[in-house]
Length: 242
Length: 242
DNA sequence: GCTTGTTTCAAACAGTCGTTTGAACGAATT
DNA sequence: AATTCGTTCAAACGACTGTTTGAAACAAGC
Image 1 (cartoon, rainbow over the protein chains, first blue to last red):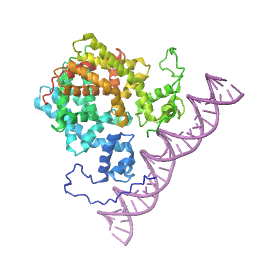
Image 2: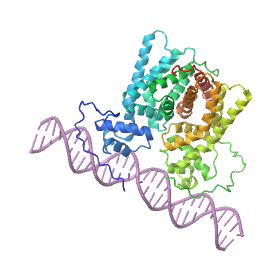
Image 3: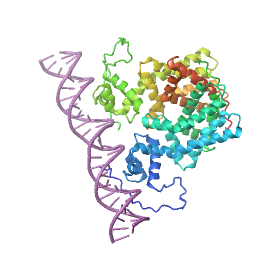
Image 4: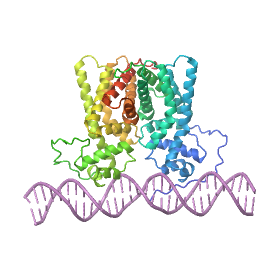
């Protein structure tokens, strides 16, 4: 009862052509079905998690037919991965090239920890600003996916991250030559933890709002808090248990 | 919602008395229905998450009837909370009393960061060792719950943690008098992130196995890696953006 | 014996889930 | 005009969800 089925409108929208949305608002309309699904899925997966988000919720929010997800993506799992590859792949690529750029500028000496951390964070921060609304959603979604138990999520993420992690472990190793390789691995692990937790939690956002409203760009503020903390931790003397 | 629970008595339970299990094995059988459900739920919630774990899976694993969950706990959500309160409440209480004990020993001076960190970690580590198998499961479950989007989980956890967090923020504030209160809050936040990520992820366990098999007690090893990293981060000079 | 109250059980309830189907549409090609 | 192809649609599929029910099983009290 009551839950009358969604009556979708006909397609055939000739698109907004090149017209700037012109709505002083925030969100871009997203013309084609595939993008609308991705946008809605990104937002809803972040809000409720993978299992708790039904395809009917996504397709209703995106104003498309229920079957469109399986038609365009194959399955719910593949949709989830598509949400990630759309943003994660470019972001990690940007991290790698930024790290490379920084390294070339100081060759042959090693980078400072702060510089390496910046190469990890800046692409994430840009992502959160570039896209009108989706970027911030995505970072929170990403942080949550780190802790998701589903095997297909963990495998997918670890494969997406392998190359980037390896490059940054190498960079930190060069920057901290006195530190055993093993210790570098651990500290990179802790660093990722602090980062993903900060990006995922709503706590961080609440803190920002509480203290600084919109005074500084919230992203730079976050980096300015996190970078000294992490850099100092990375440079700590190695533990004596070997 | 808010379905008022049926009758549910807790009196006259004969209990396991003082009998030590005495089985040289690993797992305790868990005699009564309620405990068997809690044990199975703890393990399965950790493995698959809240939404993806069905009551039928739990009751099958616990070898009890499906209706037993609703009879003993009221609902799936209340079962989830019961899984947490069983271990989380004593652990946080232990953290508080340990912090208090450390503080009394050095009064009137302030505690070192390492000591405060130890007061946070040792109860968690003991939990992971005391109980035969459940403890380790629970810590991983806890780490994952931090990142769970479900509102009832977030609210429940934040209420369970409020008192402990406040006490430790105060202790860190005393230990780092040169640091603005705001900065202390941020760094405590990062600290919790590194901790929960480390406890939740399987990555940390894999690292331990990779490097040290069972040479040292894995828990002490973990603390010896994490404490210097976090202490150094906490003691870093404050960021210049005010 | 019977009664009382707690706990277990199989079965059903009322939905929601992801996925599939086959018909219908729109636009370009022949 | 007819045909093709990619896309959208309503409807249904079978399986699974948390929860409820009313009857049994069980122990203890009188």
